[in-house]
Length: 452
Image 1 (cartoon, one colour):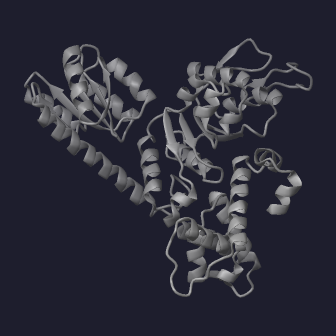
Image 2: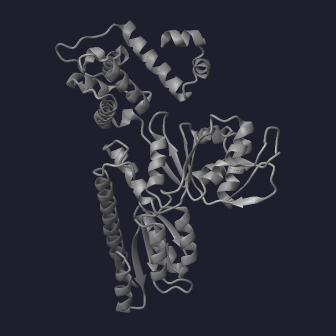
Image 3: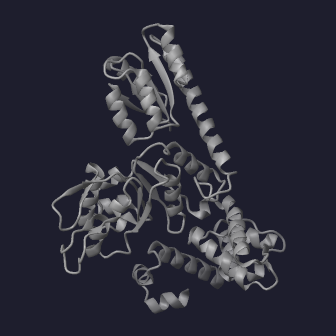
C-alpha cells in the first residue's frame, strides 16, 4: 500500500481529497500547512506528496524543494486554484512530477496518482538493479539476494536513504539483520560517520547504561576516568541496537527519552548532552508479545518502528540459496587459493533444505564442507544426514508424490528428522542458549546434547 502525504491550507478540500484517496486503497496522511508537512516528512517515509501551491506559511514550491532534500525518492504532484500557467512551469522546473488545476475531477486526480506511483516504483527498481552490478562494499550490494522479498527490502532501503527515521529490523536469528542495518547506514547521508553496533544481550544490566550513555569520573566504583558512551561515539552517525528486546524496562525509559529529546545524560552527571544519532534496532523476538506481557514499552516500540523492515527466513527465499552458496564458495576460494565446486545434486539438496539456522547455518556448513572435501567437489555424500534425510521428511509432510526410484524412509528416521529440526529451531530461538532451550522443551540438558 502506497503512503501519500497531502498538504492544503483549505480544511474542507483536504478532508475530501483524503477520503477519496483512502477509498482508492491508499494510506493517506493530511497536513493543513507546510510546516506540519515538513515535521511529518522527518518522521515517516512517503511515496508521494500532493501539495497546494498557494499557502500562507511556506508555498508549495518551497515545500517541494525542502521535501526533496528530506526524502529524495518521493514523487510530488502540485495543485493550484489560481489558473496561472506560470505556476505549472515553475513546479515542473523544480522537479514536480505533474501539475493539476483546481477544481479537478477526482477520476483525473486518481489517474495522475496511479501514474506517479508507477513512475516512482520504476525509478526505485532501476536504482536497485543498478546497485546490484556495482562491485564494492558500499550501498547494499554486499547483501546477496534476487528474490522478490529481498528486492522489496532493497526498495525500502532506497526510499529511506534520504531520511533520518528510526528503523526496526525484525527477523529470525541468522537472517542478516546487521547487514540490513549497515546497508541503511551506508546509503544515508551519515555513511561517512561512525556505525556503532551494540549487542544489548552481551552487556549486564548494571553496565548497559554506562556503555550507552557514558559516565563521569567517580560515578561508581571503578569509574576512574570520564568515559563517552556509545551514543556519543556515534554522534552524527548511526547506532545499531541489536537484540533490543532484551533491554530491561528500566533502560527502556532512558532509551525512549534519548530518542524523543535527542539528548543523553552520562551516569553521575547532571548535564544533558545533545546528540545527533540515527537509531536502528533489531530483534528476533515478538515485541507485541513482550508488550502484552509488560516486558517491553509500547511507546518505545512505536518510536523505534517508524520504518519496520521484516527480513524473511531463508526457507522463504529459497531461490537465493544457490547465490549464497556460490558467494560463500568464492570467499573460501579467495581466502585459501583452492578451487571448489558443487555437484548439481548437492546444490539441489542445499536449495531444498529448510535451514532453521538461516544464512549463518548455510555459511558455516558450506565453509566446513569446503575445508573437508579432498576431491575439490562437494557431492550429496558429503552433506550431513539431517539435510539429505530431512528432504525426504519434508516430502512426506507435504504429501508429495514419490516417483519411480525414490526411496521411502523408516518411521523411526522420519520422527528423528522432525525431532532434530524442532530442537534446532528452539535452540536458534534461544540464540544458542541450550540451557534455556532445554527448559522450553522440558528435557534435560544432557538429553538435548544427545539428540543433537
